[in-house]
Length: 180
Image (cartoon, rainbow, N blue to C red):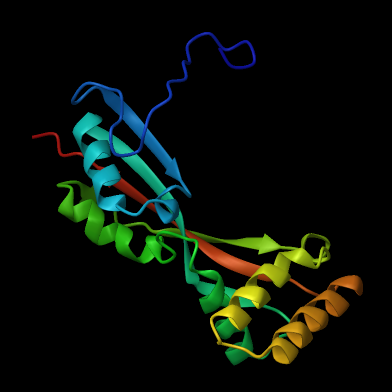
């Protein structure tokens, strides 16, 4: 149970092999998971399998193509962002969700939501936050060490003054399994 609630249960499973029978689930909530999967279509197909007719799936995920970092020239911020995408299996997950919903045989609800996931100055103060991206940019030869270090310093200096932020947009989609 969860915090004294007795009509809720938790079940462990894998995104592409949900441990439920076909057409038995009313609601699937999938939040910032697809970006980590090399085969997100398999996961959405399995969601479609377990949803009962009329059931819904809420899919929320990021699109790293929307990433911004204050206090950096947009070209430099884009170079840092591109270099940091290597470890992310599906960095542009959100932009593919509507087509993946359709491919899974689900209907896409017309309302699409979005919200920015904000990294505040406090969150950006530890230098390792952007240093990983800077190191990756240097390793991939996208930036020189001097330029990468200057970018980290610029954001860190702005963060010390409480003026820095970074953001990635998270998009939300609702899919519905047809009643028929």
